Length: 322
Image 1 (cartoon, rainbow, N blue to C red):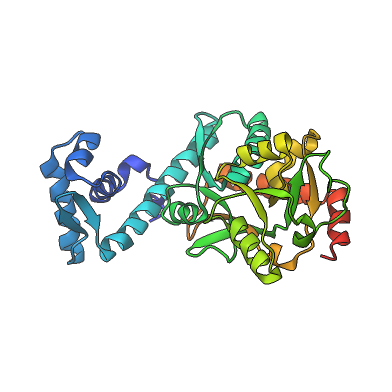
Image 2 (image 1 turned 45 degrees about the vertical axis):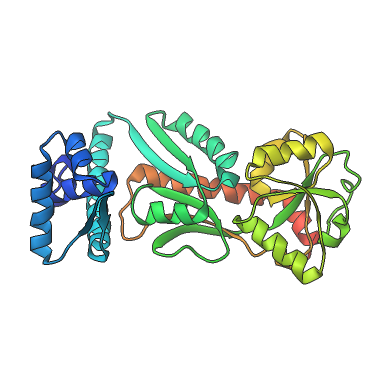
C-alpha cells in the first residue's frame, strides 16, 4: 500500500483516467482524441467501471455524456486519487530540487485583483520555480471547483462557511465606504448608511455577497440609496469613485493598492448588518496538500493577519465599537 501511494499520475488506474477524461470532455470521442486512443477503448473502460460498480455512471444523451449520481461519487474519488498521485510526483521532484510546480487558485474579484497578485509576487521571489493559475469566479463556482479538485485553493467571501471542503483560514471582513480624498464625506471617522443619503453610489451587481448585505441593510434601515451605477467590475467602480465622486463599498483588502497610493480613502461603516461576511480560504476535503500549496496558504494567511494588525485599521474598528 505504501508503494502504491507514491505512484506517478501516469500509473493511476487506466479506467479511472479514461473516466475522468470523459467527465472533463463530456464526450467519448473527444476524450479518445485527447488520450490518443480509439473511442472503443474509452467506451470499454467506462463499461468496465460500470460493471465493477454494477451501476450506470453516465446518462447517454445526443448532446454528450452526463454523470449520474453514482458517477458524481466516483468522480470525486477519482479526482482525489489523481491529485494525490500528482502531489506525490511533485514531492519527489522537490527532493531533487528540479521541475516547476503549479498552484491552481480560484478567487472572488475582491481578492484576485489586489491581494493574490501581491502575495504571489512575494512568494515567487522566494520560490521562483512555482507557477500559478488564477481564476476570478463567483463564490459558488469557487466552492465547486475546490470541492471537486479542479483548483488547489479557493478564496471567497461567504455569509456562511462553504460546504464540502476544508476551511484553512477564516476571518470576518467588515465593509468600508470608499471614496475620493476630496469627497465631502472624506473627513468623517465613521459613516452610517443614513449619512450617505443622496450622495451617488456605485454598487456591485446582484448576486454578490456585498450587494446582498447592502440591500439587506437598506431594507432594515428603510433607506433608498442614490445608485448612480451598477457594475460587476471592481476596477470600473473604483474609477467612478476617482473620476466623478461616487461612493462604493468593499472589504479593506479589495482596495488596498488604491488607498496606499492615496487615490482613494476608506471609512469604516457603523451599520451592524454590513459586517456579516467572512473570508474563507478553502482546500479539497480529505486531500493531503502538496507542501508548496501548504506553504502558500500559510503565507496568504500571514499576509492577511499582518494587514489587519495595522494600527490605523485597529483604531478604526474601535471607533465603530467592533
